[in-house]
Amino acid sequence: MELFLLSFGALFSIMNPLGTVPVFVGLTQEHSKKERAITAFWTALNVFVILLLSFFAGKYILSFFGISLNALKIAGGLIIASSGFALLTGKFGEHKGMKRERVQKDIHSRDSISLTPLSIPMLAGPGTISLLIAYNQEYQKIYEIWTLLGAMLLVTICIYVILKSAHFIVKFLGASGINALSRIIGFIVIAIGVEYIIASVVDILSRIAL
Image 1: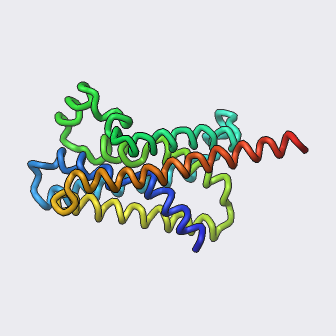
Image 2 (image 1 turned 180 degrees about the vertical axis):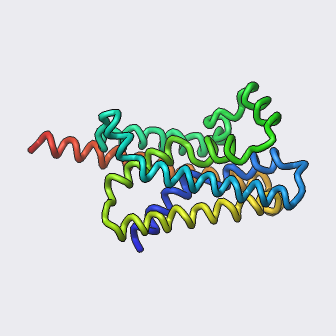
Image 3 (image 1 turned 120 degrees about the vertical axis):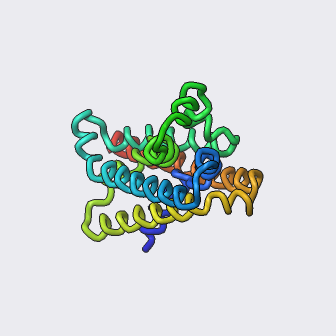
């Protein structure tokens, strides 16, 4: 249960579906309620597939590039911490590259937005992918894998529910409410990133001492 709560909390915080709500609302302004629900469903499904690929293909990626787990965790920790700073300073969209003029033109000319930009990079970005690759190396027992899969599935369901209710959330919380929540989540995300870096550095130093 502890692993489930830990992994769910980490994934939800790093992916931050609440931070994607304003983007989703802006891109689906002219859509019907049914079309929004379909977009939310496909976004959640795409995210789940990306999570599965990241988790199960992780060891092959590390092996192919000759990257150690500690190196990955330090790099991932830096990415996660930078995402947290972006949330904390209110520059999440800019951090994800969403403010660039060419990106904006491309987004608004797309028929489907569920894969890009919603799934990648808004939800399943480098921080999420590096976290899951690290989980793949750390937790290899059958019950641990099933626990992590359960956490991924619950996060995906939460993403679907939040995006489907995005227009209601914006009306209920307002821009300031979403911004305040994102800043709180940002603080947690920074802590997760720092924890990953510290754990890796301690492990490296203990190996050198031996």
